[in-house]
Amino acid sequence: MQETAQAGLAPAAPGGNSALIKDGTDASFEADVLAASREVPVIIDLWAPWCGPCRTLGPTLEKTVTAANGAVRLVKINVDENPVIASQLRVQSIPAVYAFKDGQPVDGFLGAVPESQVQQFVQRLAAASGPTKLDMLLDEAEAAREDGDAAAADALFGQALKSDSGNARALAGLAQCYLDGGDLVRARETLDLVPPAKAGEAPVRSARAALELKEIAAAPVAGGSAELEAKVAANANDHQARFDLSMQYANAGRRMDAVDQLLEIVSRDRAWNDEAARKQLVNLFEVFGPKDEATTDGRRRLSSILFA
Image 1: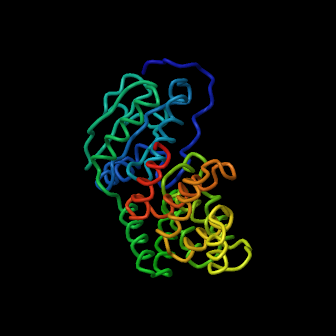
Image 2: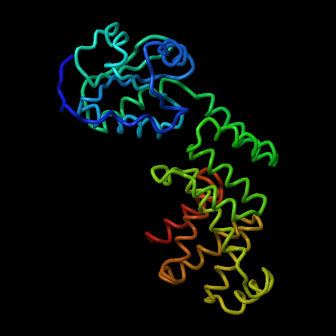
């Protein structure tokens, strides 16, 4: 094989997530690649310890496969120790990457290509694979939570995390279960387990926004909703009372009322408290979800105010 790399470099580090990334061998190829690819597309990374480009490509592949949340898997094969597969695939230079689906090679590339190209490669495979078993398990967990079956949701999210301990959707879902039960401490601890690279994913943002909302609502305020309503009625520019009232409404499930109060603050004084009302609206939209009526109506009305 073509030695396109520097001698003396240490072997590439093993895959990070054992559920999605593993080191393969000639002997394990049938199970790790051919059989596994009948469930989900499997990428094989053919590399060697002396190959510099392999050391560049390997971490990029691992990062991108991990970000795909179970839609694809990665098997790393050291060709120096396992020459049979490379020979059968007629590999002439490394790194060489192949994708298998239903036991057959369906795509591939050679060399240490840019990360954007690796992402496109993985996205094509993920799009063609349809929902994975992990996806369906998470769908079931989220449905159980929406139906109010906390025990089932908790168990299903836990089962998903046994398969992929860093799965952002599963961690966020489990944190939401804790929030539903009023356990803010465990919710925050669970969200802190989300890998930094996945912190921006929608389920995580939504869970963190929900946690922040719960923490704000749990903070002591003078009186309950009735007293806050009286304060706002007496002084329409008492923005702190209106803000606190919005949080009370949101925590009580009165979503439209919560949004109304924050929009009123934005319309009266957008800059109040470093734009706290606008920022909290964004958090509420994350919590409610993009399809909720309070979100769609609130976003439309917020845009009207901001761009009037």
